[in-house]
Structures are given as C-alpha cells and as structure tokens.
Amino acid sequence: MTRNYVFIFMVFFLIISGFLVQEGYADRGRPYYEETGEVVWDIKTEDKIVALTFDDGPHPKYTAAVLDLLAKYDAKATFFIIGKNAEKYPELVLRSYTEGHELANHTYTHPFKVSIKKLQEELQKTNDTIYSITG
Ligand SMILES: [Zn+2]
Image (cartoon, protein in one colour):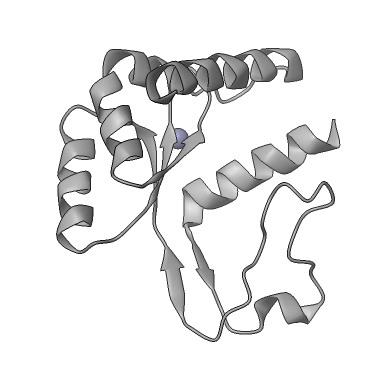
C-alpha cells in the first residue's frame, strides 16, 4: 500500500513541477531513494540541472513537436504516457522510446479520484500497453 502512495506522489510531483536538482539537496537529511529503493528522489551533483517532463501524451500534434525540439538540442525528457492515448498513437510512443527518452506511466484514462484497485488496474493496463509498443 505504501508503495502505491509513494508512486502516486512521485508521479504527481514530477507532473506538476518537473524538478530541479540542486547541489547538496540530498545532504539536507533526505535519502537519495525512497524506502523500497526503486524511486530516485535526488541525484548528487555539483551541476545545476533540470529534468524535463511532459505529461498526458502522446498527443498527435504536440508530442511530435516536442520530440523535434528535443532532438534539435540533443536533450532528453521523461514522457508520462496515458495508456489510452498510447493505443491511439503508438508511433509516437515508439519514437519517444527509440530517441532515448524515458517513458513513465500516467495511468490509462487519467482518472482524478479512484480506488486503489482501480488505480492498480489503470497502471497495469498502461504498463502492458507501453510494453506491447516498445517491447
Ligand atoms: Zn496529467
């Protein structure tokens, strides 16, 4: 149960804000990983870096434009994929993956209030969809 809440928090944290990794951030008492060791909270670095994240895709118009721009600047991003959109535009999911971007699960239908059981189903269905596209 805790893992689900951690995952949900992480997804919303990344979606709403993106995140800025600041020098020494993890040294202020927070571990680099959450308790299961599967989610990275911080990365120790001396550099000031920004992680780019895009959610609710793939979108037939905007995702391709974002991918073109990222390629132009040789930048990588994380795309939070909605499963039902992935089924409509699998070529954009595959392009994102083959161009070296990270794909993340943003549920199947993007519900705002669901039970844990329904949320697990949403996440699993999206995992299956992304896997079927990317292998
Ligand atoms: Zn969203």
